[in-house]
Length: 235
Image 1 (cartoon, rainbow, N blue to C red):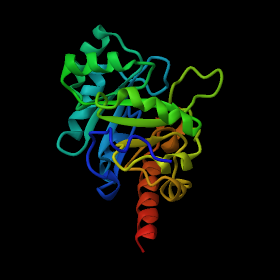
Image 2: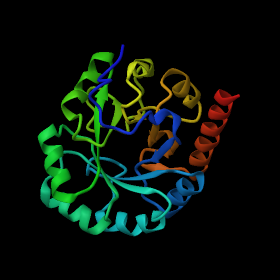
Image 3: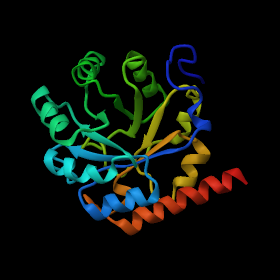
């Protein structure tokens, strides 16, 4: 199955370009340093109070200074109002906004116009039909993030450490620019490449020793596993 092969204005065939990797939910200098040392293209900071990865905008602004010129800093929000977004943009000065809530296409367009920043819209996925949800965001969101639907009772829209069937992403047109999220870790990254070959990866709980506690050793291990998996596919 193919999706939107003539509708998407995204970059041409991102799968043949360099792989983007976002380490998300960073809160400490050591974890950020490990992400940058591993070659992360994006570093994410969570602004959702219920998350164990929550960080204050001013602290995110201090941390992201180390990433300037090395990786894009992403502000992750969940149905945030304008006042909170104003504070985040002012104090953190992100390179990109990730909208991980129930934002409508109209709201995404409003946010883009207000801040002049690229946006990544996160969408929950459990089956192939869920991919149809990208249709109204085409031409509005600059990128998509596909994450597993949260389990019943979870208060977190992401970062739950669960995966969906990555095989359904193989049907996406090469023009769909996205990051794969949900349940990724060093042990299964090879499966992710084999089943979906995503142009971008987003990992959070898979490099933590406890909820919200990033482990520099696990971050390093993840980057080694990514390299090994890509080398194996290229051989």
